[in-house]
Length: 137
Image (cartoon, rainbow, N blue to C red; front, side, top):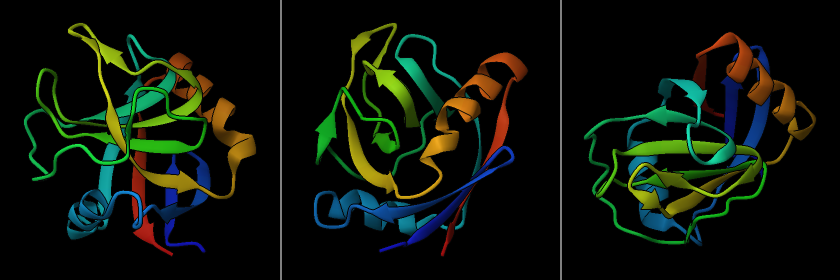
């Protein structure tokens, strides 16, 4: 089932919200839809891009959390010892910050366009920040 259309840089992806595994995170994110931001390359985590969100509070705790999202998984770190962020894994990720290892809530899974993930990650790495937009499909 496709819930979302995500546009990141020149690429488009279909995605599903993980409502059963992360209902509170999905509900909080849906209240912010459509969601617009900019992705930059991660600093410590490996092959991922992230949306830094500072002290934004989505009002959720941990659910369906992981430190190792698979390519195409999107996680929300709700804040705490590091700033709030959304991370999209395009390759191997060991989610962490300068404070150490973190865990984020896996709440979105890409369902199409996975062949463009590495190109997106490399574009962000070598060309800089890219716009990202989350809309309902």
